[in-house]
Image (cartoon, rainbow, N blue to C red; front, side):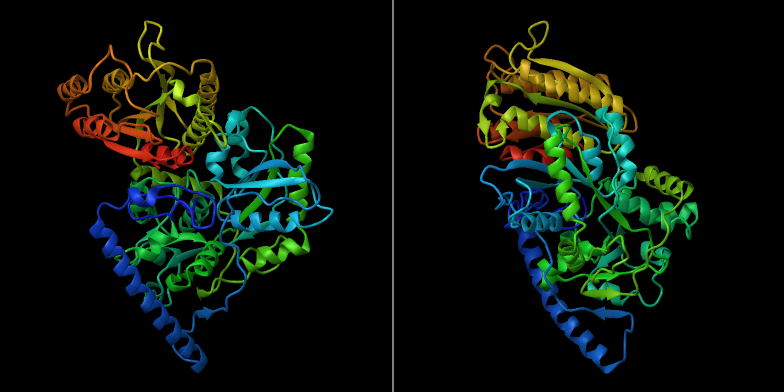
Length: 574
C-alpha cells in the first residue's frame, strides 16, 4: 500500500491507529525505539513545517515575479478525500441495508468511501451500506478465498486477476477502469528544488536524494516505474538504483516517512496520493516531481467477488455510480484522471509536467524484477497460531478465531512471493501423539497459488479444532527445533508464534526450562529468529519478552484483533 496509511519499516512510518479514519495498523509505535527519538522526530517535523511555510511563500513570490524555478506549479487547495470512515454510511433509501464489504486499493479508498457516502444520500439509491477496507491489490489477489474474501474488489492491477483466479479457483471478470492516476516522485520541497532541470528516471533514481520504490513483484507502481526506468538504465545501474529499496523488502512506501526522514528521501507514488497527503498535512506538504519520460498510469477497476446475485448487483450499482458526473468531480478533485480523458487536478506542489506514457513491455518489467530480486531478502517462516478456547470469544467482527483466520490469510497473501512458509496450530494435546502443536501445511512458496490455497483450506478447518488450554511453551520449543531442522541457506529463518494468552500447560515445559532449552539449542551456523506476537490484553508480556530475548528474537504486540494483520505482515518481512 503506498500513500496515506501505508505500512513500512525502517523509517517508512504510518499514521496512528485512528485519526478519524479506518484503523490501518500499529507500525508507527513499533518503529520508534526510544522517547528520545520521538522527541527528536517532533523537533525535526516542526523545523520542516516552518521551512515548508517559508519556502512555499518564497515560491509563490517568485512565481508572481515571473522568474526563478520555472518548473514549479502551485495550485490552490480544494475539497480532497483523505480518510476512510470507521463506519459504513447508512443509506436513506431503506432502514435495513445489506452490508457490502469492499477491499479497495489504498490510493483510491478515501474517494471510493466518499462516493459511497454520497450515493447513500440518494433517496433512490441502493439498499446497501458499503464497508470500505483499504487493502493492497496483491494481498487481496492472494486471499480471495474463504473468510478473507470481500464482496467486491477495487484493484489497481488487472494483471493480478490470474493470481486471484489461481488462488481462489473462481473466475473473475475484468471491468473497465473508472479512474487512473499518474506516477510521480514525492519528496520534500527543498530536495525537489535541488533536482535542477534533469528530471529523467535515471537522475531521479540515482540522484542526490535517495528514492524509495515499492516491490515490482507486488505493486503496479513498482512495475510501471521500474519498467519505465529500465528503458534508460543498463542492468548495473538499474540494480544500483533499486538496491536500497529492495534490501528493505517491503511492498509499500509511506509519505509520512518521506516527510519526516532525515536526510531527505523521495518515494515513487501516484499524483493522487501526493494530493491527499498535502490536503491532510498542509504544514508538511511534499512536492510531486514528474519524470520527464513519464510512466503508464495506475488504473482502478471495481470487480464483484461475491457469488450472491443480490450482493453482486449492489457492488455493480456502486461501480455505475463511480462513473457518474457526480462521482467524476469527487475523483478529479482528489487528483484522479477519467477514462474519457478528463485531466486530474495536479498536486499542490508540482515540479515538471506529468506525462502518461505507454505501459512498459514484458521484457522491461522482467529486467526490473530481476534487478529487484537480486537484492531482495528471502525468508522462511514457520507460523504457529493459538487455537485454544479463548479464541472462541466474540468481537464485533465475529469470534477472535474468525478474525485471526482472515488476518492470517491476508498477511500471507501480501508477503513477498519468494517467502517460504509453513503453518502450525497449537493448543493442549492437539497433536496426534498428544503434543501441544500440530503441523497443518509444510513449507512452500507463498508465490505458489496451490500452496496459498492449501493454507486457506487449513485455516478454514481450524474451527473444528479450537478449544482447550494454551500449550505455548512446548510449542515454542518444538517450532524452534523444526526451524533449525528445516534451515534454508540464503534465507532469514524465522519462527512466528501468535499467542492469545499465557501458557496453560502445567505438565509441559516451564518458562525457566524453555529458556534453558532455547539457550542450549542455539547454533550460529543455523540461526533461527523467534518472533512472538501477543494478541490482546491477556498475554503474559514479560514471559514472551523473556523468551524472545533468550532466543535472540523479538516480541510484537497486537492489542486488538484488528492490529494482527499488519503485525503479522511485519513479522513475515513486509
